[in-house]
Image (cartoon, rainbow over all chains, first blue to last red):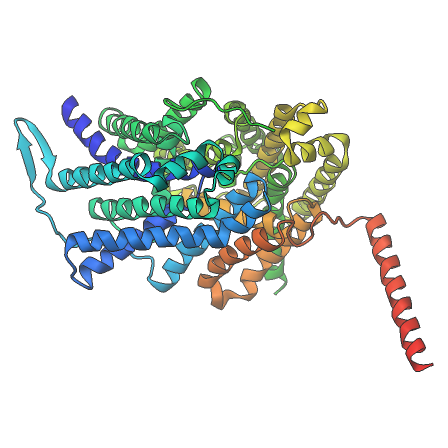
Length: 290
Length: 299
């Protein structure tokens, strides 16, 4: 029973990890949380849905499309909503408000144009579980886990193993000095948003397959943000660890206490972490510099 | 027609109370509150339950709702207000969702998702209007007092504010508390005006609507918040046909304001006797100049 819950927790934690990484990546470079991240996920989910159900494309091409569309969407949002604020060094408050505006717009535009209905992905994978002894693992959960692992692996390779990745690391350490070393800050910001958007696109397809697709599904990413906070905002390994911790906490709360109060436990976990260790599990407590 | 107008004015006043608190907290102190609806819900439910179950007089119920909502803000603000704004924003968002979940699941007390029906309609304009005006006056005075200026200092630069001996955390906490009080009051009035409350009335859409009002009117002006609350509560009544597109427009407008004119409609302009007089004077000077130029042209 307990191991079954751990498996369920890991399966949901994997999707959280994909999205939480996007939050942390943007935070590490730009020092603010992209609260419009959820809407990128929603757009990715719709892209995947239409690619599969209307265009009847193969599954991996659909995921690829969601990745590209999610990435481009995130870059476009950055150019419209954040770049002008960045250039005039606006306070963080304005970034949050701008993000909220972008979310309101995208959510309601989707409601008005596509409609507020819940849509279900077509069944691509068998729905019966695979048994490992007494433990049941959903076929879909396994696929999601593998795709998540591949995506995270690719992202790690990109950040740690390529020249552009080194540029991102340098910019995360100190944007201004990185600019002096011949790194184009605008390019780095665009790449960071593309990466975050791409992972949100994958996450959107995963969420859509596991649950349903609807215009305000972006609100689900609050959980991913909590995961990023629990792991330490700005730390990528932290985001992954935080996501699994959150996923397992949630499934345990749902299984042993009450599924209605599951979300209360997530928020309580976040507040607890903020009180005990404000930098998160793997982050460092950064004091603001004048 | 008169009753309809009365209804709109009542709604404007209720929104205005909630927006006033938010204006103080987000506009003047600079802490982004994503979850105003949660405080509204606490005020509404506590006040309604006091009236229905305890048969308390209206004023007592209102005060109870107000206090409950204000007191909740203290333990919520204590851990989160010391940190960066991002944490506070998400904590308020989470708080509002948590309140909604609690209300939905504590079925014995709150009636669950079906809500509380037939609350006596005790909210009348004769009570609401003076209370609203008094609150506007109080907030306006607070903001232009020494404490209000400290709040503005906190908003502009926390480190600089600390350097001139402003207790950043204290002012944030006070603003958050007052915000809670005002939202609770608004909730109490709302419950006793609509006569029926259910959790779905206090969702994220409500929080968004209220924060949009603050941003629209200008984050540095009480007058702006008042004007925005009046326009944005009244506008949907006129534009009923475009109801679905209203929120789309809000989204565009909020981004546009942040990018082009972050100080909002009013900026930091306040409607006072002094500012009215200076406005009159500058109008007069402009007219005189225009007049002079015209005559100069003819001659």
